[in-house]
Amino acid sequence: MKPLFVNLLKRSSWPWLAVFTAVLVAIAGLSFSYEVYRARNSVTQYFSIWEEDIAQSLLVKKDNSLLQKILGQLRDVDSAVATVQVNPTEATKNLCVFNNEVPITLFSLPAGRVNVCYSSADLAWKSFTSPIFMLGLFLGLLFLFFGSRRELLNKLKAQELQAELSLNKEISTMSRQVAHDIRGPLMALTTLSKLSHEMSEDKKELLGLAVSRINGIAEDLLSKGKERLKDRNSDVAEASTEFAVTASLAAQSDLISISEKILKEYRFSHANIEFVWHQHVKASQVMVSLPEVKVQRILANILNNSIEAAPEKEAQISLSLLERDDCWLLQIMDNGCGIPEDVLPKLMSEGMSFGKENGNGLGLFDARKALQAIGGDLQLRSRVAVGTQVLLIFPKNAQSVKRSS
Image (tube, rainbow, N blue to C red; front, side, top):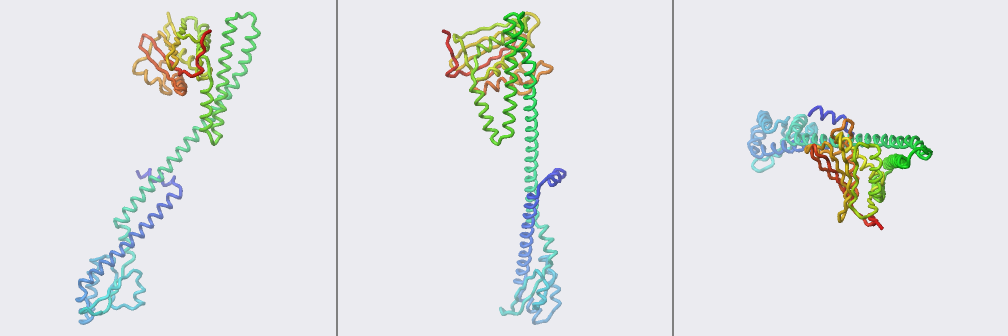
């Protein structure tokens, strides 16, 4: 506790220490005033009891030795009593900073006065050791501790936020650089697809699809980099982020067209796996509220997972598009190795991966996040040695259906 408190004191700014000092001085003054009041009250009560006896001894019998006895008794009453004087002069009284002048009577008639002087040092010592000061000191230290701790936590939070902003800046710069670097080989592929006369039409189409996907990824990286840069430098970062999300959700893409294109590409690149497409809807187009590049990324991540889990022989991956009253269901099934029940719930968390040496755990997490942002969802079912089923739920909207003619 002590090293932590000392560390907090070192890290605290002057306002907390100034407030603590002011409160401590106020409590010390209050405690000192209370001790002066208590001493004077105790002495006054003592004289009220023995007033006539003291007057007879001092004024009638002229017994000055009684002063020493009175002084000893008063010190028993209150240890701060320093001296006792009978009928003191003004000059004598002025020598004492804290005093108490008590009138005495004899047979109900004024007989003089006794001046009791108190020691300032004793009063100060008693005030600093009193319960009032100790309680105030304890509360003041608590105030300083929690105030300094709060300030320290705020500083640490600010440092974490600054580090996060710096990381976002690096990611933004890197994504824009990657998008820029992709443009070079992308242009070469585009030119090659146009100039290659010996290539079959199917291969040209596949090459065109691949080029289109790469271009979409580059555009997405570039736009994300610009959005993050804008959010970081703008005072209305939250508003701009919300605008970007709204704009993203406003984009429409055809789920049927995207699924057919990506299946054609995967059939060519993974000839050893059987890809099956079942369209159980009458519509020629199924429009969903996600950009095409995001739908492509979701499908590619799930298909890649199924390919990695596929058996060496008779591997099959099927995609089925179904219609419900309020949503579209895209079901992706494989006959791979499956996922254990204890691992299955964790795969929806960020950074969680299963069965991959270089997996980053972002595929399913990002896919579910994107679907939930438009009111949909991603559901996962699996059995070991049987296979895995991924269900993508896309909510319907007014422009989502175009019927076949």
